[in-house]
Length: 126
Image 1 (tube, helix red, strand yellow):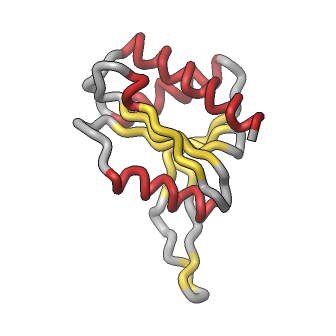
Image 2 (tube, one colour; image 1 turned 60 degrees about the vertical axis):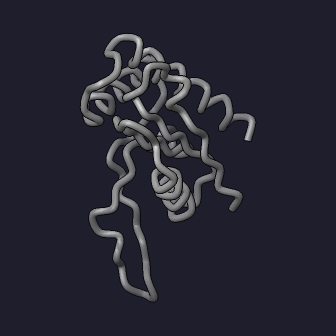
């Protein structure tokens, strides 16, 4: 978990840089592109709009399900630009963590006055 914590710390630093540069109030897609660029600048591998496979009783039903960012194939990052995070946003990330068999995720809401208030860690206790 130590390396995951270190990775999440770096991602939070990149998100803070994006927020400092762009501020609140933009579309989620803008923050996604900016955060991908910031992660690339720091040498952290990231994939965006990663398909989440979901199987229900032998049938693939995960078509169209995509998580925002998968950082270093270890950390799921879900981005929002909303008035406030709701419990369903946390549950969505936890479901992605379970489906992708990942331990840690970050939920980042850029539509806040203080970016640190917009960041939540979500842990999958596997």
